[in-house]
Image 1: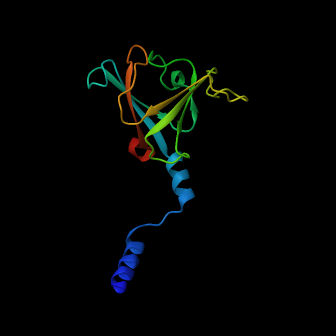
Image 2 (image 1 turned 30 degrees about the horizontal axis):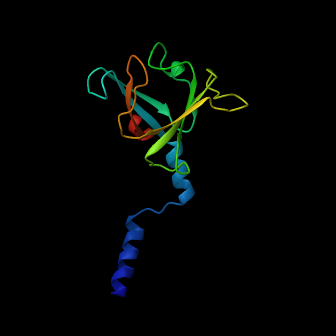
Length: 143
């Protein structure tokens, strides 16, 4: 029995790559984006639009998607939870009074913050597509 366990450990160390805990978290967080599907009717398949935005970085959706009325002028930061590990079941969406992609500039103080789930239809947010479903995507998926 001991030889069998030893053999399995040797095989698994050859087959399965090993990662350090810090590298995995950092690499995963840095290489992840948020995919948001926004729909006019409770996350249906019709009249929807998909957006890709950064995770754990400030952005201004009006700059990313000019002319799209689904987004406000305010800066946004979507922050992963559980110590910034992925995957988690939810994330924090923070809004800032700035509109230049600085997320509050030197003060960095958010004006509003909401905890949102991954993989569930949430809303209403507002016209023209008030319902959304968010998921984490790896940057490699985008290419």
